[in-house]
Length: 344
Image (spheres, rainbow, N blue to C red):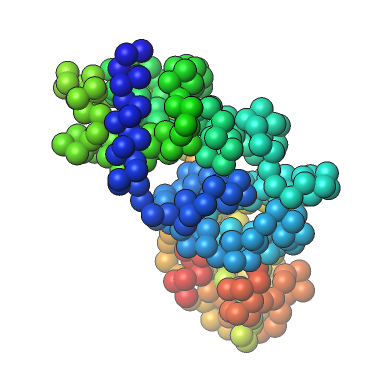
């Protein structure tokens, strides 16, 4: 516990001097922190900044989010992935506005009751926006702490997260719990990095770090192997009629729910097989242009895609037909499919 206590002032001083200038750090507004933390899940900071700025321009507060059309929400989120995050944001906003609230609850326990908010996000909002002494433990924090303590705890195990939440809570500084949480996150993101060796020569807590002192940096943290992904071959059809393209809406539940996609099948077609498919489905075409291949990886799933641009003699009534401008500004197309269309 002595080591744990000693790192507090070192981290706070370092964070004060070297923290990154990020748009969601310009104030301590709970709405801003909430949106940024949800966007940052599974997404790099550098990628989130432009999304966050655009989102705030279009959806500046809780009421605006509650009233936002789902298609517009998904369009704003397009490219961030994990779209259930966006839907949970809207559901939570709708519930709070219906209850007459114009901001998020002010305590950790009440935040935990909201859809899409787990212990990490609740801890981040409660500590940064409301100065509640509660930890916010994510992958960055687990990596930092297991190295400091020289621990072989599996950071992919939920029990490890609970353990470190309990270890950190007693040392949370009364005067700056939010800065302390952010300092740990910042250290993990910029110095005690996830890939490659950490930058121990400039780490403010290197003198207190067991992994550094005992040469355990290559061994820690411990993380169990990821689950093997299921691989699916997919053929994507970019049907074109004049200046419009065929799209269809995905089901309301499941992967990429309620988003728009280009017609596709879970198989890999050669051009000859594609011609036979078009003939069997009475689809008349003028030309077929191969678009090449692309791979898109989800958490537990991998799509190996083959794309074809198919110029049609007439529109097929079962599809929605959209111009390039509408595809860009109106319809939310998953990044996976954009990897194919951008080859056209």
